[in-house]
Picture (tube, helix red, strand yellow):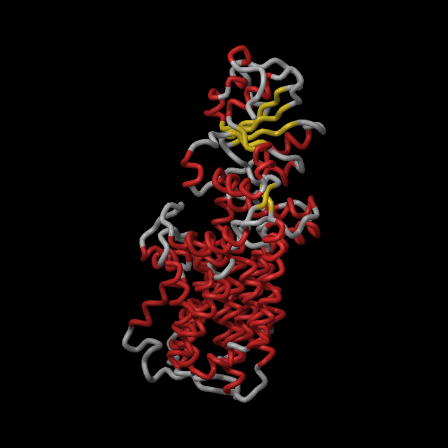
Length: 552
């Protein structure tokens, strides 16, 4: 009992310290302090575990190839054009790798910075158009949230795209509010178009369609038709085109067929197809977003309460001329949340990270539940806020510890062996897999041969590494023929008496499918992946049964 009492007293002391810290933060909060605190919180643990496969390895690997090749125009996968996604994330990540080195922290830095900028700008936006206390509560809820924390720790496009969509919405809303308050608004409009262009270069048309939809339905609900027309400003449109067209025109000139593949297929056909990975029902994102924002999302039930934030008695006071009517701000947040969730619920294929742009308005609605209770002088509101923040932070840190204790699949251990032992002129072959992260970790700059049944019709119907490499080969068929081999061609290559030293990476339980690996032990293996070394000129098993020359 004494031990329990001591634990309880220690817990109360922690709560008291945190409450005092929260009061201090509210008093001193500026956008610089917010940015610094959020960056430190998000970036402190991104170095702790290697890049995760396949997504992190793929996107950081493409950026690394840009850096080492010096070709910053064309995203490449195994030396071939990779146009599944636009180039902005690769450009930014290549810059991070150039400054901070080839490591996971640098690879995830773009996601961390995107999350930091989102939280900081949202704070500045709310501080101007709401109240300081509301702005501070909202960014605490947003920053100390497992969903945003996880997105910032993941090196793919989702956090960057969600940030740019959010920033575009805020720039457009800022322009509307400025005009309504008879303040200059053209800089804000131009900023909206610059951010929309960045969103287009990060993920394509959704960087324009989603923020445009949010602002359209918000202004439609307010019947602000002239404001819609004011946002459609021709200098802004010309600026947008000047920013997005050069890269696409350059790619079309360099690789005929780019427009059809990148615009028609990737933006329209792919959105409506059903043959991709991760099929989920329409309502998929509702439990996802509620579950990944725990414990904060528990407070949303108060919106259904008779005396909750919707009650007419809850009208936060307006203290400054820049503050806007609370109902107008709620309308923006509702349009923002609804458009993002509905848009991404339409296609059958759904990934969790698609709805990151919905997190800022959700944090606002959660904030209002605390604000309403505080206005009604409910007891222990501040303590409840701090308690939720500590629990949320604990969940985030437990997730990091879980990745350390139960590491996910990574080729980094095999890459380290390769980096130490491989010689110039050696050949690297991957059988029935493609480890996107291995070239960066091993410093491997030569083409990698990928071996599988490329003549299988299912290759072009799938949505995996085989489809990505096969699509890339459409733009460089000669290079594709050099690096995409059938298993029989690999065997013929190894049967040549002058074959170079070959490093062969394969799943350990599939090694028996390659005659050359019969009776051979891998020089290294990790989590089911093995690395074999076949010395130059050495005879390999199975050569007596194979032709002496490889098929063209």
